[in-house]
Amino acid sequence: MSTGTLLAIIIPIVVVIAVAAVVASLFMRRRKLRERFGPEYERTMGDADSRMAGERELRAREKRHDALDIKPLDSSVRDRYTRDWTSAQDEFVDRPEDAVHHADRLVTSLMHERGYPTQDFEQQLKDLSVEHGRTLEHYRAAHDVDALSTRHEATTEQLRGAMVHYRALFDELLSDGGGRRHARA
Image 1: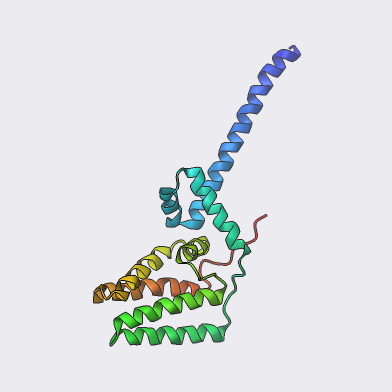
Image 2: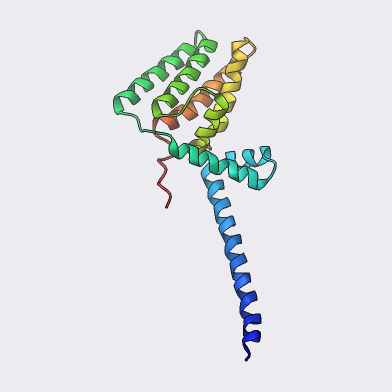
């Protein structure tokens, strides 16, 4: 067999293998992002101009999150937050709007204590999405009701729902939920 014929056979095979490797790599990266971000993956894809842009956004969130100093809570701090949450729940009976505002401040304080920046709500969502993507919709819903209650437009049932939503993220943050990220190789 001549060298030319051999090259004509080998080069297409190498190209097909390279393309298959690239496709497999993209598929694996997409699957990892879906698993990591949960429902937040689809939300981000829906908001992005393209799938590539959305996935680039999620990878940027991971990079930013990796640079944060997220730390577990000391048991005494965890106990204090547990007591504070109980107080917020007890407050709901007589002053539901105040209890929801208290819960919002408590979740924000807990986020800050763990090491998350808390100045901008949209950035909070992005930072939390890396480890807490599955409970993020709870936070959005609770925050929306908190905004309604500031204008005294929330029903008691909405306020009760907000407390339940805040509790989902609160419990996860309190227990270091979402698990600590392992360093990437």
